[in-house]
Image 1 (cartoon, rainbow, N blue to C red):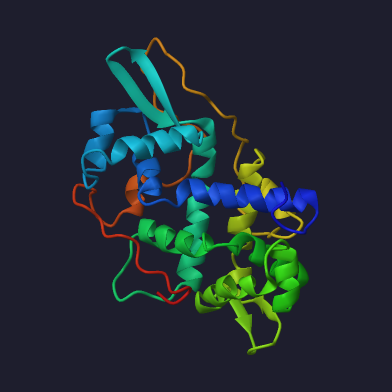
Image 2 (cartoon, helix red, strand yellow):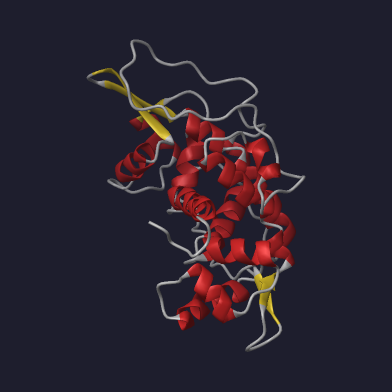
Length: 279
């Protein structure tokens, strides 16, 4: 079912990017994914790494990540179960440093040094505004668009005035610019700078290597970082032995501990309220 008035392949691309963002933006999901970097962990081992989560919070988070195909639950025996990344989850990790790079360049500097994980969480909050992916796509491809024309493209089945709440939010977030009421809308420098991130998410969600992001018809950007191979989803399955730690060129150059400013034994602060490139 079409969600915009754009061509079917473009509509599907926007829907996939929106879905990819929806997988990782729920609170703590990125931190759980990073905690699983390395060898698969038993539930108790993972719980110790994300000890700020209260009893009963980790299990539904893990289930949603397993359902999304990012985490794999492996039964070695009836009483020996481990959790680790799927190939799809491993392929997603190199996108996160791209988000940090964008945040460091475009988000307003905080009063205190921020761990990269907080940069990621702040940035993802902006990207999951309602209709954000579609609006940013149209503005990137058409440069300047009036609010009425944008509404006809992004939400063809709704009253055209419904486009203004998400547009105003994106302007307040610093991703979209306009010269005033009744004037066309265009991407800001920060919005345009999202090209490598959204291009990589598009490639990842389509099951392509991340180096395909540079060839994206809209988000293509020469600075997109390549990955060595595409992902293949991996469903839960029993295994006779504990899997070894994943190594090789497909692994990101950083480790999950690099994204935290301190050991994760204490409950971290939630992401800062997003005010766009202003924090």
